[in-house]
Length: 313
Image (tube, rainbow, N blue to C red; front, top):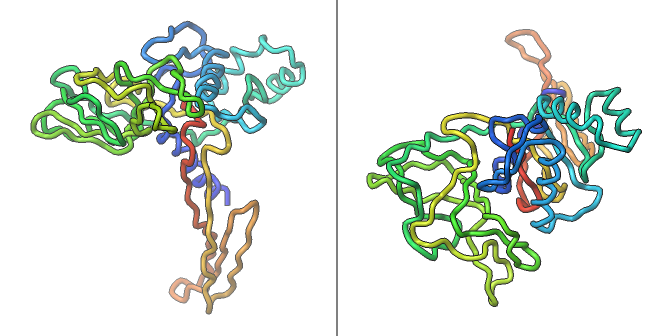
């Protein structure tokens, strides 16, 4: 059961690769001391700044400020964050919890949790022949035509990488106002270049310029022709953790009942906290054993990516 729960947990944390908003510096553990400026949409990695900035990005995406905001970070980030923040709070109960258990509690607008199953993101080769840029102006939708990549190469960009486009700023989804920084876009599938060094990149969110007839705009304007792309996912061909800040409405887990087989030693199905589990035991005549298994038919989905923010580690 522990391994089954761990796998479902790991699959859920894998939804972080669908999230386009990101703070932190890939390759630097959140909560470490030092300074890093707001540049190219990479917000600094200090604690508490990095968590406050994640909250700020969620605020700009109209995420509710209620009791349902969470931060999930890996063991390294938890250790550095507790060490960095141990003297900054006046909440004696939370300080005591950090001291006794070595974990963050509720702070900075989030409930914190440590999870060893935080996923790693691996970046592509980023092989280029020139500065990657858009091929034409006024592109909209869920794909972006780009050029400047090395011709006929596989794995140049991998799913989950994040980039910005020069001149394309994000907007608040409710009032459609400019939020003041470039919109992050996440690559939704692995990308290879063609013989001319072009890549049509599948992206999220879709490019929907705001306008009088567009109530669900995502950006201030469509990109210009030749607009430069800036990668936000660290160095090429490396891996880094995808810690996560989110509102609980960002994701969902669904399970379905599995059919109970007949002609076995026993079979039973139970639902606990909305998770349907099936246990079956049968006799193995070849080995004179009673193997037993437990199964869950489950699937995760990202429903509202704007209600979450990745925290690079």
